[in-house]
Image (tube, rainbow, N blue to C red; front, side):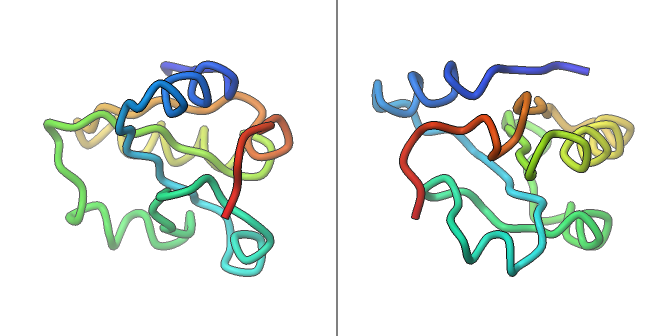
Length: 98
């Protein structure tokens, strides 16, 4: 499983890079703040909404602490998606939220 530190994601966003981030937390967690422009797909719906994703794009997956996103990464990888887990999740995120 590919992983990335949240600080590297933040630096890439601040440099103007457009990253495709998927937040797999529950709606009430996302309501408290998410990475700007992240797509919200709760973990329980990933299987049903993965058809919305492009297998030619790279996705960065985030959750609260890293466990649910790791499960989402393993699942999506098994279907051929290019996905990377954000280590430590939103607990480790120090960047802007919306």
